[in-house]
Image (cartoon, rainbow, N blue to C red):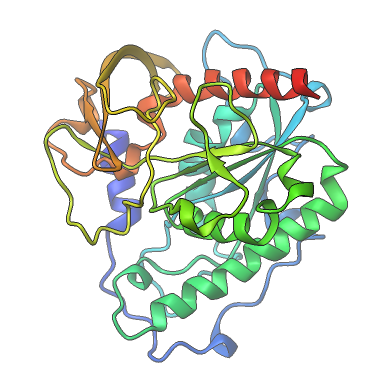
Length: 327
């Protein structure tokens, strides 16, 4: 049986040889989403979709009873294509997005929050390695979809409810700009429970009001990390590493190693327990684990969420409870 890591590795970086046309031209990219159309969202409340996966031993919670919203921005699964940006009508890609990142990341929050996942014209994986400036244009182009989706969500869905912002990888590149544009100001900051913006470099200097979370029940703040094997040091130029890291076991920023038996979601909706060690080292996360699908891997980017699935799940519950108590 293929491991989850192996499946994701193929999805993220396999078949990346196809080259989109150069230079980037916004006029030749696929048509824009219409966020008034429910089909242009991968997940929405009050319907059954990939964010509603139920882990064995748990019961589904009706969206009617959930006190918060999650706005989730998924990572890159667009590995090859003829355009710099993916079409939201690519059924094969959308199926993979729902089956993997939505299931293993967004679903973390389905006991406490209504989950909104907009389809967006994500930049092809090559965008991150392009040296001619076309990749940055493709990613900036993708962000405009995310921004419009969030604006539509605020106007039509949110109704003043608490917000949990969740993202990974390319999604976090977009989320850090979304924070600049919306949350780094007093009004919307007051609605933010926490931003779980994982797997891409975050720089606190870019924000005036919003700060990293220092303790497990801090609210109106953000957490971030990028995972690597204990002892491995990524290149200083790695786009995955920024200037801040939070430990997903202790939910603090100290550099002491923390060990805990954590619940991990593997390639089924069944909780597996492994003893993991997490330590902040040079603003990124060192991980020691016997989890089968990471053995022999130095860069654990693809499983930034899976390794701490139940730890994040519990932390989100704790932060929301603290947020609601303050209100």
